[in-house]
Amino acid sequence: MTPRLIVSDLDGTLLGADHDLDPATIDTLRALAERGHHLAFASGRHFRDMLAFRDRLRVPIHIISTNGAYLHGPEGDLLAARHLDSELARELIALERPSSVRLNLYHEHEWLIDAPDPGLLAMHAHTGFGYRVAEPGELASEGVGKVLYIGEPQRLAGLEARVREQHGERLHVTYSTVNSLEIMAGGVNKGTALASLLDALGLGPEACLAFGDNLNDTEMLALAGEAHVMANAHPDLPGRVPHARRIGHHAEVGVAASLRKRFEI
Image 1 (spheres, rainbow, N blue to C red):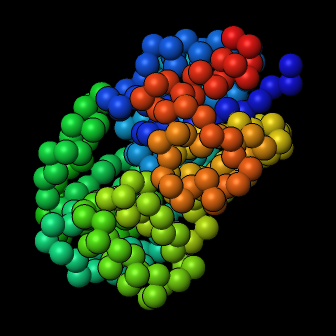
Image 2: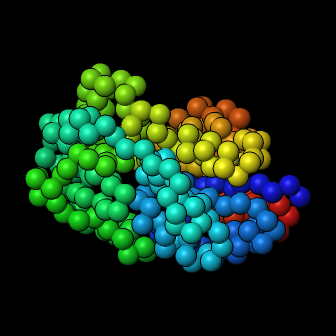
């Protein structure tokens, strides 16, 4: 069988409701790697936050992190990085926002936040990687892969409208969940990172299977020859990727079930 690239989002897709890998998912991915297929994770999470999942599989995995700002090889080598222009990052850091909205900065080696958020700690408990609360003067604009605002959807909608009006295509603006507004440099998304990875592997989009559940997966799914949208996906996602196939729920190991059927495992 021709080698394929199998790339999956994590939260809401490959991970269960507990934000962890199911044993059936681990067994399935290992079986595919043993058959010579390429594997990749693609997430809005920080690279270091994703390492625990890679290490548990003990097979080669490429990592697209921070919504495409960083691409790492199976050995942890940085293959590509794209940061926000420091002036734009500075404006986003200073953007007036409601006190309930948390400001997060993703740098290559660190995740900073402007105030504690216990819910985030629980979500990332399986990886051992978390944020560091930073003083205002530590929120530097250099080397920022992503600016993330976390808060109530209606609060984020106002911020999104202002960012789009002021900066347009100079920034890539998307959501990973309804309460997570994610902002990267223009042209930075999971799809452009996936295109770079396919080129590096010498494969075309038709050789790629992609799995996702939210709006930040749109470009990745649109590029893949075989796109899969979770049963629990954001309601707008299927319309954005009309060729995608709807599969099972992430809490019911939908990705693993689809892959086992597709590759007769």
